[in-house]
Amino acid sequence: MTRFRSALAPLAIALLGLTAAPQQALAAPPRPVPVVQEQRAAPAAASDCAPTVTGASTDARLTALFTNHGNDNSRLDDWTGADGTYSLKLPNGQELWVFSDTFLGRVNPDGTRPPVVEEGGSTVFLNNSFAVERDGRLSTIHAGTAAKPTAVMPPRDEDHWYWAGDATLAGGIVEVTYQEYERFGPGAWDWRWHRNVVARFAPGRLDRPISVHDLPSGQGVAWASGVLRDGGHTYVYGVEDLGSPKYMHVARVKGQSLLGRWEYLKADGTVG
Image (tube, rainbow, N blue to C red):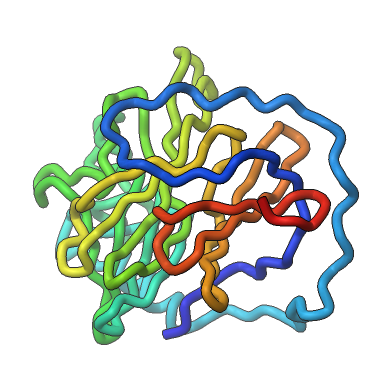
C-alpha cells in the first residue's frame, strides 16, 4: 500500500543555527532556548515542480479497515480511535500505522465509548500507539499488558508525554519522531512543547524502543510533521509555533537515518 503523506511544498523559511549531530538521550536536556518573534522573509513562490491537487475522495477500503477494527469488541485492549496518524511500509511489506492520542477498549452499539479509566470508565487512553496491517487486518500494538496497556513510547514521569511525528526506515530499523510535551501548571491548558526525540524500533518488536535519541530542539521547532526521502537525503519538515503565526522549517540529513548531521534551509535559499 502506498505510504500516505501530506503535500510538502518547498518553502524557504528561516532557521538560523549551527548543524547538529543528535546524541542519545540519557537524561532530561536543558530547556530549549526561547524563540523571539522576528521579521520574516516573504514566502517563496510556488515551485514549478510542486504537485497539482485536483481533488480528494474517501478511501473506502481504509475506512472499512479501521471501522471494523475499532468496532470489534472481541479484544478490549485494541484500537478504537486515535489522532496524529502517519504510516510507514515495513521491510516485510506490512504497513505500520503510527498514532498519537489513542483510545483502547469497547465501542458501544451506538458508536460511543465508555468513559476513560481516569473518569471511572473502562476506556484506556494512551498518548501514543502503533497498529500493523497484515493481510487486510489490523493488529494493535501497545506496551504493558493486555490488562494494563501503556504507550509504546513511555513518558519519563506523569508531567511529560510524547506525541508522534512522522517515521522513516534506516537500515531496516524503524525511526519514529516524537515531540515531548510537559505540564507546567494545574490548568487544563498549562502544557507546552519541550523537545524533539527519535525512537528506534526493531520491526519485529514494536512494543518498545531499542533506543531514544535527542533531535535538534534549540530553535523551538517541533520536528517532524513530515519526513520525505529524496535522492541521497532525508528531508524533515517542522513547525515553529508562535501562537497565531506559525512557520514551516525544512532540514535534511544525508542518507536514511535521522541521527546524521542536520542541515537547514535558510531564508536566502542557502543550506547551513
